[in-house]
Amino acid sequence: MYWVSEDNVAGKPGKVLYVILPTIGCYRYRIGKPCYMCSYPAQAPRKTSQERIFGYFLEAIGKIKGKEGRFGIRIFTSGSFFDSSEVRRGTRIKIFQEIAKLDNVFEVVVETRSEIIREEWVRELVEIIEGKWFEVALGLETANDDIADISINKGSTFRDFVRASEIIHKAGAKVKTYLLFKPIFLSEGDAIEEMKRSIELAEPYTDTFSINMTNIQKGTLYEKIWERGEYRTPWLWSVVEVLKWAKRKFPGKRFLSDPVGAGSVRGPHNCGDSRDKPVERAIRKFSTTQDLRYLEVSGDCIEEWKYIVSQGLLDWQLIKSQVSPFSTE
Image (cartoon, rainbow, N blue to C red; front, top):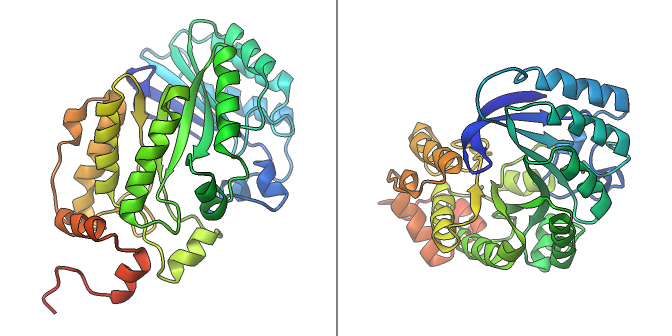
């Protein structure tokens, strides 16, 4: 799968080509230890080939080849780009050699788990696309190792993330840090504070933060807990608050957030209908421009959100009461 959409490209507004390569997916999933919220590897093909992977990438870049504008390329594998069981070293090199030919591409992002990284692997790709903004994205999710273990089943620690980021920077690339907003077992207020703390701890090792709001994917533990009425996906207002706080505190860092499924019950939402659209657009516009003025939004359900956060209500307490705190009943 591949598509093009507007986003921030190396610090300025542009367009990004997103490419999901047909690899066999994350090794943690393959050994029966997936992250609790993730179903992406389940959609990966069980069998593939390096020729198919490279051919698919060539097909994808055809969407931007020769076009005017400022483009970025973000490559996903439903696992790790540096896992040779997914993408072999020779294939990685061939992909980057093709990117080097594209004068309209200013940014390249790949992703990997923290434990799958070597300085020489990163450095050789840096040298191939010399002059382009190159980021390696690491799925930290949270700086709290207990939450990473109990709420996510991440299988890696904050120390692993620090080590990987140091290797990436030493090799001449930049680090993009994925953080998961509102893992299970956290209240809305706890999720906000935990996200702020994770940003503060990861900031010295990070060039770009990607604040990923939890959405309910099929076949996951998160879906089972959500179906029992014991979990609610994040409020968009919470993400707006975190983004405003983060950009003001660390103005030199890039903060991105893509509210996948916004407005739906499975995705991040406020009222959970069309009234959420202005907030969703504000988050996307901020991500593209890094301009805090776009986050100065207001709308419905904000008082209810403030009440829930201030009272420290857990999801099961709120959902199972079946009564809004502002109900007249």
